[in-house]
Amino acid sequence: MKGLRFYLFGNLRIVRVDQYEEEIAVPPSVQSLLAYLLLHRRRSHRREILASVFWGEHDEASARRCLNTALWRLRRELQLDEELGAVQTLASGELVVAPSDNCWLDIAAFEEHLTAGLAPHGSEMTSEHIAALEAGIELYTGELLEGFYDDWVLAERERMRLLYLKALGRLVQVYRHYGPYSRGLEYAHRILELDPLREQIHREVMRLYVKTGHRAAAVQQYHYCQEVLAEELGIAPMAETQALYLKILQGSAHENGSVPSAENREIKHVLSQLSTAMASLNEASAQLRHTAQLISELLGRNEPH
Image (cartoon, rainbow, N blue to C red; front, side):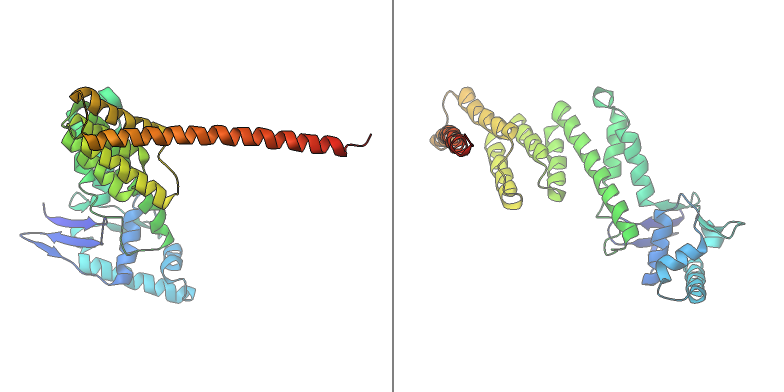
């Protein structure tokens, strides 16, 4: 399809498609203005606000001139008026971005696919919904507008990131229930690459490894989860994660009639740790009761008679 393709995931890229693809380079200041207009394409923009956002260090008249120059360069470099009519001026003087059918935007396609794919729940998911999610996540080639650190980028970047993670999470659930399990593992690992502290996803990976018959990999995943949580947060895995881990170890024993000596030693070690923890807890509780009794006695002695 002839026209322009705008890529905002990863580094900002603009590609003109005709008989062949040609990448268009625009100056950084113009890139920022274009990215802002595309990101906020659903609303109109007052010129004085745009001038203040991008050239706030100038006086009002100079800022307006800088804005007009940037808009002129955009229209010239991208041929917006002649080819697409993307940036329009309203009667009020406000600017609005209204891309035509010949103008494709990756974040718009991303949101469209994910909105459609995430609409149903659970068993209502169809192959069309799954295909929409998978088409959408493939457009997420990096964080939104990498290299931009303006306030107007950060909130939208996080929103896109969370939407991407939500779509991946839905696909993990689908493939864990219906297979192929390898696809579920692929998407779960993508989540952990971005957010390794998601303990629920570590559990999903452990379950998926079990379903594929790779219990040793499930055990290794637990240890990886344990290390990440200890290093980043200074905490141990949740009781639910530990219970799943023990269940996996015990499942190996039940399925095979016996377990390899290494796993057997690991089971004994874990059970020993639990026993030690319970003993320490009981000892601490007894010490607390004793201390409370001493405090009560001391307070009683100091009461006036």
